Length: 467
Image (cartoon, rainbow, N blue to C red; front, side, top):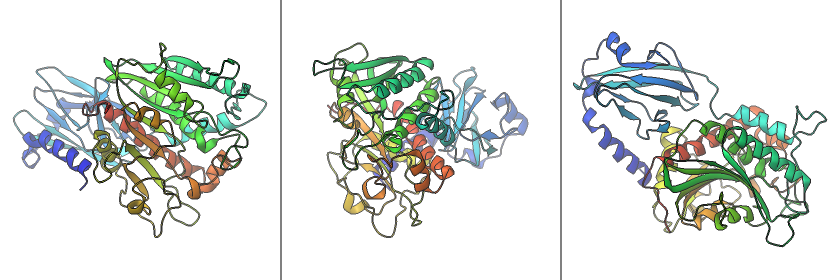
């Protein structure tokens, strides 16, 4: 058992200790259940839950508890309850939301009454339209990257490299800005010019802000929207940049939609960076400049999650039949021999316990890229989820400011060498993983992992700035 799993298990045991013995006693009648727990205004269990979709619930009875399995998520006051246990306080009715992961087919809801008796409710879970899903991601990718004469059918937001100046980048940035602003976020276009030529900005970022309950802390999530310019190494530049990094850009657009009705503890930024390909200039400009919508210098920066090169990863298979690698790395990793960060516990808990990923799945051989300090022990591990020092993307900017970070990344280098090349297209992504359906499954998994990490980390006060 890893340290992170042990930590979550111990916390859960402490929370659930008062319930011991409850579920072995006689169950209450179904009439009593009807009076206690309702989902979508009907007695719990009367209708199936739809996987990945929001459902409302009400819980009645002083001292009554609802206990759910780890892949069923409870939200109260629009924030997650990390351990999946809620209790009615006083005579009030507790109301909230239930969300399953897209991978749940059935579940059991446990009711514990104030007198110690208990009841279980078997619930069927049917296919739903997940709040973040691969099909919506694909449709938006296709719109952004397709070129046609009808602007209502395709966007043609390609050739998004910085400098020159580049009207294609400006046009795309305006489109992305409109998406976040249209969802109600306080959204800004941030330009930084440090070479005295305002027509050639060093960086142009889209920054969307959401107020938190506390004004003492800040946290964020982001992806770079620029792509490798012509003649850039290692493969000569690209024009779609589908994998690197339109994929992460579209994921951020879907997260913005999913987060609208959630509440976070800290002020939260959702960002699209530019100039990542030129040395993390965009995220550095945001983190180290003083402006009304830059990173606040007087607030604690707790954590940051980065999305770069996503979708060519487990559960998708190579043409050899082996799965593509899946990478999720937390940091900083100051001591490679131990997992020392609270955000690592969250990352492991999400993958292992909530999404129930096969954490010890390995291939017969090794993967073709080894840029992390644990490579000797993980070179054949499919789900490579651990603390690491790996850089090469915008999370480094925030790690350098003391934030705990998570970096999501799919295949790269020998495992998928089309990035930074003209072959980095949506069509090539589809071909590489064996079809559109496989691509949608792969991107949906990593999007859910990162989304849940953010939502759970928000409610994990142990995640603090390390500076």
